[in-house]
Length: 279
Image 1 (cartoon, rainbow, N blue to C red):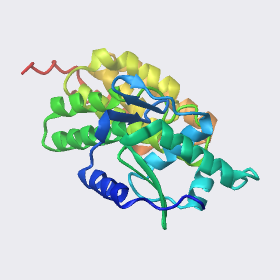
Image 2 (cartoon, rainbow, N blue to C red):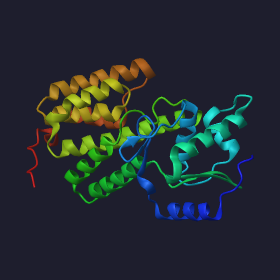
Image 3 (cartoon, one colour):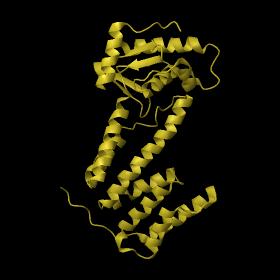
Image 4 (cartoon, rainbow, N blue to C red):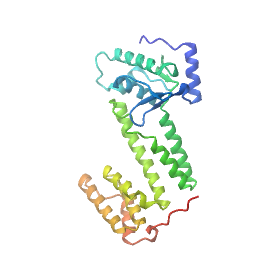
C-alpha cells in the first residue's frame, strides 16, 4: 500500500483519543447535513467530493479500522475507476493535510484508522435521544420532548448531504428513518402534554412529505381530535386510506384503524386536553 505504519508516538495518541471518546484540538466534524469540519470557528476546506466521501465513511467507523477493499467498496461500489488505488492514497493524503495535527489517519495491518476526531453531532444526538428515551420511560414527557427537540436541532439537512457513495446512500436512508422515529416520539409527547393545536400544521406538512407513513397520519388525527376537530380527523383518515389503497393496494394498519374507530365512537379520551401546567 505504500502507507507505512503509525509511529509509536502517533499510535499512543490514537489510543489515547479513542479511549477518551473526545475530540481533541478543537476540531469539530459534523455529518447531519453537508459534511463539515470546523476549527476555532472557521470551516476547514476538505477537498473534492470523493475526498469528503472518504472522510465521511471513515468517521462512521468511529475509530475502527477499515480495510482498503472496504473503503473502495464503500465509496465507489462494485465498479471503481481503474486507478482507484492512486485515488485512495491521494484522498487520504489530502485529508491528512486538511485535518492536521488534530487527527491521525494511519494505515495499519487492519486498514485505515482515523482517530482524534469523530462525528460530533452524531455523538451529541445519540446522547440526547438516549436521555429522551430515559425521561419518557420515567414518565417525564416534558423533559423527553425537550431532549428530542435538541436532537432534532442538530440536523442541518440530509445525512452527508450531496456526497455520492454507496455506503453513504444506505446510511442516508437509515438516518432518515431514525430521524422520523424520534420526531414521531417527540410529537406524540407534545400531544400528550396538551400542545396539539401548535403541532397540527407541522403534522400536516410531515404527512404531505411522507404520505405513506401511517404513524404520522395517526398523530395528525390525534392532534386534530385533541384540538376539537374530530371531523377533520376523520377526513385525515380517509385521505390516508385512499393514499395507501392507490399506492400500495393496502388498507390502513391496525393502529390507524383502531384510532379511526375510537373517533367514530367519540372516545372521551380523545377529547381536547387542557395544556399541562408549566413547572
